[in-house]
Image 1 (cartoon, helix red, strand yellow):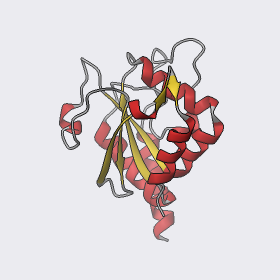
Image 2 (tube, rainbow, N blue to C red):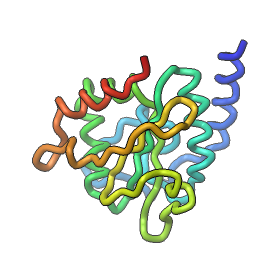
Image 3 (cartoon, rainbow, N blue to C red):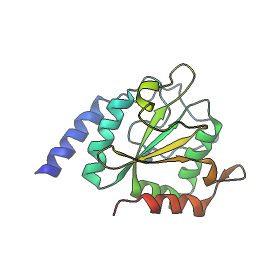
Image 4 (spheres, one colour):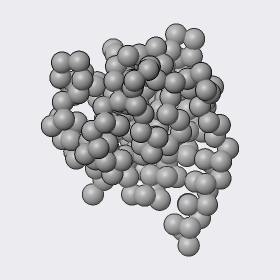
Amino acid sequence: MKLQLLALLSVSLLSMASPAPASARPPAGMVVRADLYLNSMSYDPTRDPKADLAAGVVSAQASGKRILLDVGGEWCIWCHILDDYLARNNDVGDAFAASFVIVKITWEPKKRNEEFLSAYPDTDGYPHFYVLDSYGKFLASQNTSPLERGESYNKDRMLAFAARWKAS
């Protein structure tokens, strides 16, 4: 019964979420795997991060996953490279999908979401990950640069990150 109630609440919260605007698209040639992200395939400055996190908590509790806040912006090429990497490398994308409910949080000069992000450690670059438990409690801050290799991401490091934070 509890799981059914959580699922119903999740569907209700997600139905209130607006889709990403058509103008917020990745650069030409880059691919985004829509099934990875709870709230939006883009960093949408019109979204409410508190409401998105609340929906993430419901989904994470129902699925037994952790929450990954993926902070970045449409201006951030590494954010698009990350989306493209997860879409084109199915094993890594599948590992992230198995470990996390991924919630995109916008940080850009005109929409910094400072109040929301003030609950987490500062970051010096984007994209940036915050790992939360299924209740939304902060567990870890991860700069994504150690997960990179050259002009992309390192498969072994990405898989290890997803495995390390997978809920047991």
